[in-house]
Image (cartoon, rainbow, N blue to C red; front, top):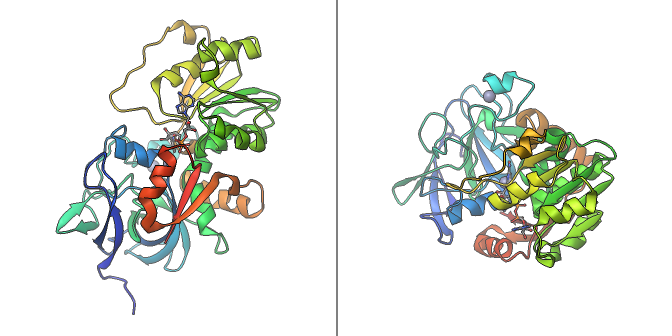
Length: 375
Ligand code: PAD
Ligand code: ZN
Ligand code: ZN
């Protein structure tokens, strides 16, 4: 029996308030309105950005269904949807691509003005939600919400991918892999022979390492306070691994000593203001480029010596690896299918969806890189 046009009752992991475990609840998911798509989620990764919502570092409205790194199959589409149809394999896009705003029309950027990251409204673009639980409206997360058996997204926030793609792997193209790899090859545009430093070796940081390696970097210095991350960093291309805990002096001084005048490119892939400042201070004083990938914690500010920038350094940020999402995601999945990069080393755990709280504990205790929840 077709579910199109009907409310679907299904299981979802609802966050009722910050700093609490997820509650598995029965939720009602409304049918997609015009230009919207309802997706049956089949696999979703756990990213630190999700945990930032739980911890309060990323402020979002509650109750909410979070999750943004996923893959699934289109269940039904609203009026006017032309780019996907029921049965298509798809990846939801936490950075949409509307094709009409100033960013979408420019070749310079990718953060479509229709994104709900900075605004954090928790609504669909029309200002309403498609989720209800126990009679209460439940918010969406950055236009995706994937910790649920069914979700609704706007057509500009979903990309059709190859029918043969393994969803429990390519879900990482929806965030972690693309964000890290793109920060290196797309935002920084790392060149052959350059030196790089990557601060933070989670799923995103290790993908930066992969991007630096693919770009032909001659030296990739991997920095993490958890030495258990070093073996995988080396496997993926790091030439040196440094643990700031092994030194009494600041980490940027250690990197300066290792490289002479600093690295060509550095990446902060943790989400702490101190490491953002340290990553900036670690690049070449004149032409070094430092990229912020880690999500800045709410309400925290950085004070820094402007001489660091006056002398020529560039400080920039990168959301979703600089990719124009709807165009790039199908190509990245095709590249994966052609073995142009690997995802397996990033996936340390695969768990049933209902074990979501266990998956978050693995992340918080530093035991996992990516856990993928399967439905
Ligand atoms: P993760 O928690 O798996 O990895 C972070 C790593 O940083 C861990 O290995 C930690 O041990 C390490 N770390 C923690 N503190 C320090 C420190 N002081 N010095 C060195 N290393 C440290 O996270 P992730 O890889 O899923 O995400 C990394 C960040 O990127 C996080 O802030 C997340 O919210 C952000 C992100 N940004 C985007 C984007 O579009 N810009 C997308 C996805 C994730
Ligand atoms: Zn993410
Ligand atoms: Zn746009």
